Each structure stands twice: as C-alpha cells, then as structure tokens.
Image (cartoon, rainbow, N blue to C red; front, side, top):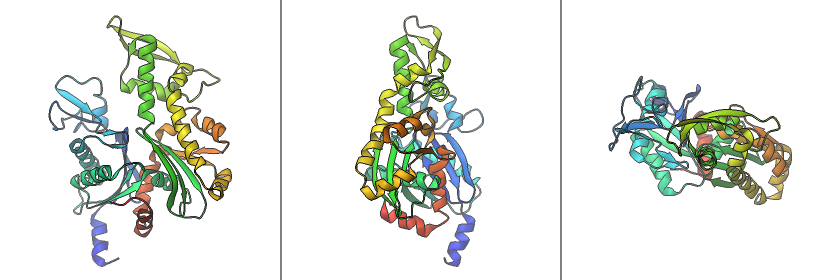
Length: 352
C-alpha cells in the first residue's frame, strides 16, 4: 500500500451496505453496524423532493412513521422492490442520507463502499446499484453477492475447501447458497421473503374478515404471532383496521394458527428453494452439510418455527446466526479490512 493510499484511508470512512427492500443497514469498517433503518423515503407528491420529518429529512425511521398515515400531498415510497432498485432517484437520495449519517458528514475523502446485491440480479440491475451509490457520494463501489456477505457476517469458513450452506431471508428476496473456497458453488434466489409474508397477512384478513390493515400493522402481526407452522402454544393478538362492510374502524383478534395458514405458500416457497439447491449440490459438498448443517441469516429467519420446519424438511441441522439481521452488512464491512480477500471473492462472483 502506497503512502497516498494510507493518507486517503485515514481521511475516508469505508462502509458496508445491506441495501434491503425492507431495511437498509450500514456498517463501518472496524466499528460494526451503525445504521439500521427502513428503506423508506417521504417526498412531496408528484416530485422527487424529500420532505422534512419530525427531526430531520423524512428518510428511514423518519419516513416509516408516515407510512399509511400520509396526507394527499405526500408520497411515502419504498424505492426498492424484490431486492432491486425500482426508483433510481429516490434510492440515490436515501443512500446519500445514510452515507452522510454514517460518516458524520465530516470526511474529506468520499468512502469506498461494498454493497450487497441479490445473486439473481441482472447486469442492468447491478449497474443501477453501482450508479446510485456513486451518485450518492461513494468513491469506489464494489458489489458483493448477498449470500457470500451473509456467510462472512455469520462467521462461516468461506475460504476453506468445505461446503457451507447459507439461507439469507430478508424483506424482498430469499438467498440460498452453498459456498466453498471463496466461491458460490450453487445458489438460488427467489423473490419471496418478509414483504411477501406481510402481504399474505393483509390479504388473509381482507378475505376472511373484510378488514383492511396497513403494512406496518401486518409487520407487527408477523413479528408478534407469526409462525411457519401452527405452534403448540397458540398465541393471539388484537388487530385494528378498517371494516370494508361498514367503512368504520374495527378491532378483531387473530391467532398464530390462522397466520401460519395464511403464510403457508410463502413458507413453502422458501423451503422449496432450499431443497432445490440441496438437490443440485455435489455429493462431496452435500456430505459436509450433514455435519455442518444450514446457517440462516436475515430478519425473516427469526420467524417462529421456521428453522425447525427447515430442519424437518431437509433432515439437516439448522442454526440461526447470531444477530441474523446484521450479517450481510457486517460481512460487507469485514471485507473492507482485507481488500485482497475482497478482490479474490469478487473475481469468483460479482464485480461492477
């Protein structure tokens, strides 16, 4: 490393970003995750102008509180859909806000940024992420496949000649991969994860009870009583929404058994993706998995009963990583500590 590189490194702040459909997490090299906020932006209706929130720009936490409660002159936007950018300009505003917030706004030299992307995205989608991140203030941008980032963040031995399996279930996508010797040997990316589960809950309550709820309420139902299978100890939760028949506010109580049935198709899609990867895995690597099992990451991996269901369906041990929601961001930031390892992984996977 030259003296110039050392000086630049001192003046800049390198970041790892998990640019998620539901949440964006930013990790700083050597410090861990410093930002974990919803991927939501509030703008003046019909424009790309970000409005002011209660204590700052209406981005992330400041914008999510407005979701479903905004007046007609404000649009509350989720600029990512199914793990990819749906609105370039709004994503750029959001990234710029998070990068400045993470760096404290005091850095002379723009940061190098590693951004995790779904393994199934195409070249156009990769280009959109790279361009948006650069326009948001990054000096250099590296794209890293989400399952690799999650595996590194979960502490799996990705460089060793053994098979490790990671299942990263976020908001927009479920990423399943078998990794060995810094390469993804086999993978599957399905656009079915936490957001699809939320929508399934909304649809169920509408069809069964003629009650409409918002996305924030559906997420709370998922977190509070959501379950991959009906639990032995049933949970119940009061839910407030609007009765379609009367147009008036209405409260009802639903059970975890009902929610498990409502989200069963989404859970089966996730399990099916895991089985598909296992069926395509070479025998030598498959034998490693008998001992090493499956590691789960991502916020939705914590859905009640999901790990046990996957274990029963695959007949493999299943472990949920420590702090699973931050695995991807931590994995991105960890690679900035070792650029040689980063370049080796990028050569075997995605580079932009």
